[in-house]
Length: 255
Image (cartoon, rainbow, N blue to C red; front, side, top):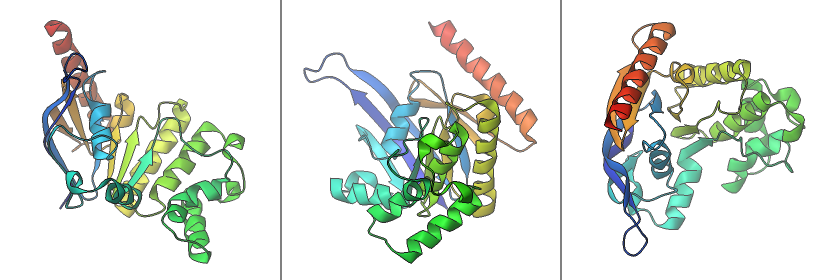
């Protein structure tokens, strides 16, 4: 069963008096099945961020369809889209996006509070998630009192507290040291394997991508190729490096 279907999606910026036309996405198509852990890679300017913004409902495609959990995002009103994003999606960003005025527990419980939930059920759910993430002893701390790795774990806890259909991660290891990055990636792997959390992660880091079950490579706004992990992580990491080398090589030849 597919959680996400990207069908011939295009995105054009500019035109109509706004200057030169730039086509960020050129008919890209792929699917993400329930319980998959998928990475998206590609050179700078390949359309990765544009694609993620489309799936997140932050930006609107020029053409094609984005179907998430059997709902065509283009058919939703702005208010319906806001509710859909809040209930169906979880977000993890490179810079954590935690609120410094809220405690760890309050940050994690924010998606539930915004959806109108309150009282003991919320506290119980937050406590459960914090325990799973090894953050129970940090629940009354503020983000600025935590390490970068602890802040990102808090951000992931907030992203999954409401059981989203799809977890979107945008360069989640970008601000972390190598040990914290490995810990975070192992956490993603644990969520995917133990709780069947569906994850779509945009990354430039081949080490991070090697934790995925499948990696989609994008070039010039289209799917260039994809790799499935059928072996251990180390051979898969090497295949990712080889594919990136080919991808970058082709780009330099065209330049």
